[in-house]
Length: 503
Image (cartoon, rainbow, N blue to C red):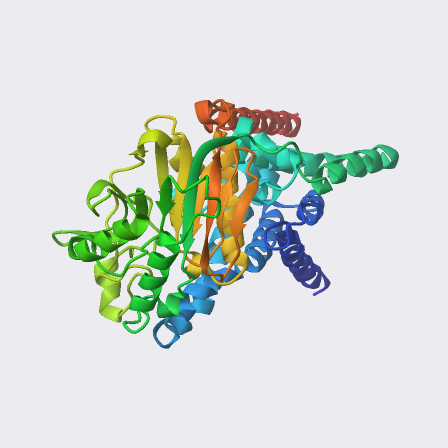
């Protein structure tokens, strides 16, 4: 009974440690607490005797971390509570519990490979990479996401999100290993250095600005009101008024105007009148806006570039869709129970576009459009057919609630800017709309739940980064080497034990 009690206490502590570590993510932005939480989890792993015990600790740590960090997952179900509210607790618990399985598997595999601690560095990072790729991936909340405000976050430009995750876990391992060896003086010194790196904000001279000015229009249309027939005219007129407003600086009129994801309620084929009004309000300035596009029986979540007469010059269709949000796996079957995708207004969801594509914006150069969720994936940005002049995200973060979710989504947009060494113009329906420089710093922004616009100068890009050239290959090679060494040492130990048994 005492043993069971100890096991459950240990598991409960792991859940609490995970929840504590989530303070490293927005809106708290305290990565030092995330580091302390990870150190505690690794110490608990060190004391685990079996792969089963280690897996339980890893799952509990992951469950607590995701449960605290992803409470915003409830928000989409509250837009239409009469239909979907009952699903919210199940979605939150099942999503967090399911993804925590990756961490549980990592802890268990590391203990299976070796009684030592170091294999966990490679197993946990490998699990994070799998989490970002399997079943279309969901890399939200990575440790590296919590580092965008501080100096270590700049390593994203060289080694990307998984390489930085590997370094972060390795640093936590070093602290545990030093203290486990009873080298307290060294442990304190190393801890002071690491904590200093995690609390000193990134700071350097402002990024050089180009000549182009981009206007980002933020209508602040609450998701529950966005498709209300009585509210649609109000939101549309608000966006037109913000579009035609006088420039903030008389000598810097906008060269491009951005509207958010699904900025108008009409499908593209039914929106000729609305598009003409938008271009007229823009006074001939190019406009990129999000719109739903119909092609026969297929619907797409798209971004279009409008010419001076409201004509559609270019179209981009979102290709990385949100499971359950924009399309339903097994949609035909689930529709029998009234379960449909949340974000799409049509049937069981949207169709996927052809893939990453550039949008030619004339004197501004080529931009890589990212619609909402696509900015979560570093690989989607790296998939661009050529290096763009800047990144351009159109999003409707009204789905994510009023704080935690949108701010975490902004942090991921900043990660993409650092990784590529490119500026990003980000327009969000309810915020945060922002201009982000190539170091991931927000140069201008419009806060959450505000209506308005910003006219922001577009920063100049940096030279191509190492990550933009190599992607995940270096991190993957290091992971494969580390895991291979662990596997070989385990095999050697098994052979040695077998010989001892025979003798």
